[in-house]
Image (cartoon, rainbow, N blue to C red; front, side, top):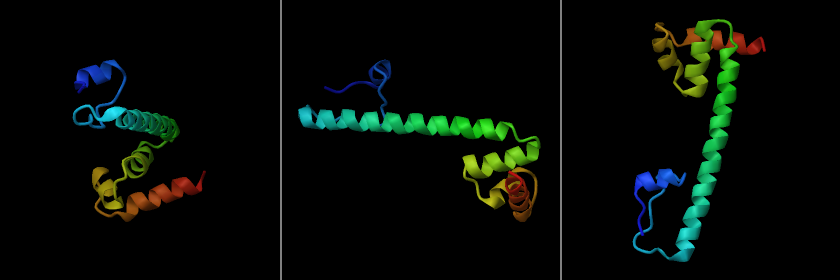
Length: 105
């Protein structure tokens, strides 16, 4: 039996993992449920870490430094992409500014 995405959300399950073709058997259903649980646990842990990171970043007094730290360490942007996002052409500016801030911790 295939469940529609709305039914999965209603049950609190993610539509990330595909439904097994046909019946799939009890062993396959058990494995899928276990994998969904593992995935949900990892997503929850990621969201908690992200919230902690945002709390930390929110306490940085300088707005440009906050933006640099968020772009580089939360969004994983390259130093060049960070420089472009803050209106600079040289990647060394945000890299050095982040380093100065991190060394003061």
